[in-house]
Image (tube, rainbow, N blue to C red; front, side, top):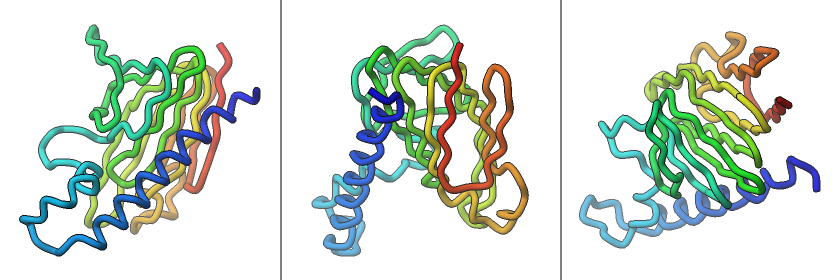
Length: 177
């Protein structure tokens, strides 16, 4: 089976969740007391919880590592700067960052969110991911559309042997170790 084939179900599942949430948000009344919009509310990031991203899909064994702390990745869980996402054999995950960038991690992969900054007002910022091993796919979000969108390398992916600057759109990177 193609290594990238395992990434695409995670992206499709993430797209389906986003479409359901958008439909729910459009159908719900525009009041703060609307309790019927819990699915859509789950997609929004609570201010002040320190997360830079949200785990959207998990298939198989996926672990988040921060220093000496390890925890199982769960859908809806937080991803913070400096954390590693490690997917085991036959496993994958998809994470949505605050600007809407989607990072999908393939099987037998390890990726660290090394740097992330995003200003929602100007849509300006930068992302640095470290692909330690395996494969990842990045579909860019608002960060590549901000006022400085013409600057090269709004998204950088480092591997053990290279640094890749991405201006936007969709990129797949693989690092064999």
